[in-house]
Amino acid sequence: MSIDPISRRTIQEQIAGQIARPLLDGVYQPEEQLPTERTLIRELEVSRSSLRATRTIISALGLMDAPR
Image (cartoon, rainbow, N blue to C red; front, side):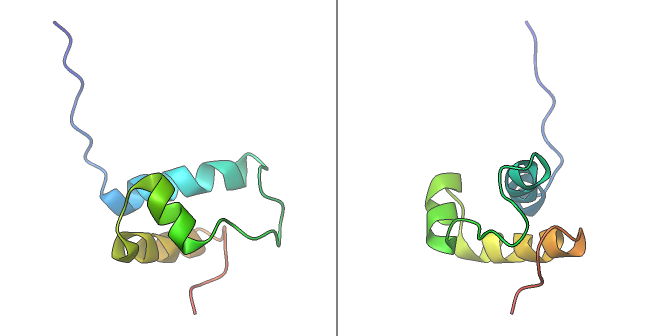
C-alpha cells in the first residue's frame, strides 16, 4: 500500500499556487484581469477570506498589484 504524505502547505499557499501557475505559464498577459473574486471562490471552492489572504502572497511575489 502506498500512502501519500500530508500536505504541510497552508490553504493560502495552495490557492496561491493555483492562481500563480496560469500567471507564470502566460495564460494571462500583463495587465489582463483575472477572473472575478466570486468566480475564483466558486471554482477553487474556498472562502472569501482565504482568497483575500492569498492576494497578499501573490502580490508579495510580484505577480499582481497589492490589494486595495
